[in-house]
Image (cartoon, rainbow, N blue to C red; front, side, top):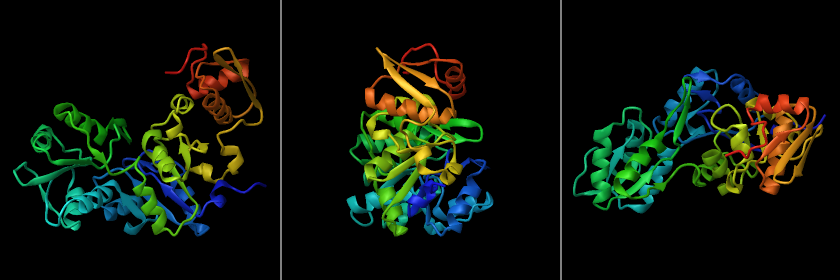
Length: 336
């Protein structure tokens, strides 16, 4: 039997929201998949763009979901933002915080002075996810940014996967300030590389695998860091967004969920898969054959990425059923 994907890498860099859990609800199979990684002594790191919780709180939340975790295994975008500001500003500089207490604590740990109101001494604004952020918080940040303060966003995820579905993420709040100020923030978390590089280094890894559900952050961050990636379909990514993914957001592997780590690597690789044939007919890709729907999706992605064609059409009853299962259009129209 071919080796499982988890046997090909020496550390695993896991996204959390949409990959391991949805808010307070664990994603089925995630705890068992992580337990199996630990049983084979594979280092695990939790790499999250959510800046609203301290590493210890994140680890505690994971333990509450029956997933072993320690604070030193957690890398957050709040830590990345504080590190960036600590490198850019003199010690003791004043930073206006738009975010949770965890982000404020990281700013303090970096030797900077966190405040919540704009003033003449504010050197920078740091913005991270906080469900309690309101107009008054954005107004203070707007004043400081317009006065010339450096603006750093922990991340720009527009949505946050939760047990209730996709809800506004930090990127949605960043967009409000971007509109109000005409300014553009520096981004500290994913898709920038430092979170992955730091996490891999802490695990002593030379060949880590990144795993996530978002193409524009998790997978793009892996690409930027030069790390192989597995994209899972438990959060934001969909079959349609995978087929149309730009080169900077393309993973090497595709799985339904973290349970895919036990599957042979070749079966997960985004490449033509046995049982399915995809041919180009003018400006349309026509799929025929039989087999697993995700195997078809891997084949479709490979051919679409190679040809640039995103108009898809099933050829035959089984292909039509697989398209329907994947939520892909069956009329031959381009995916937008």
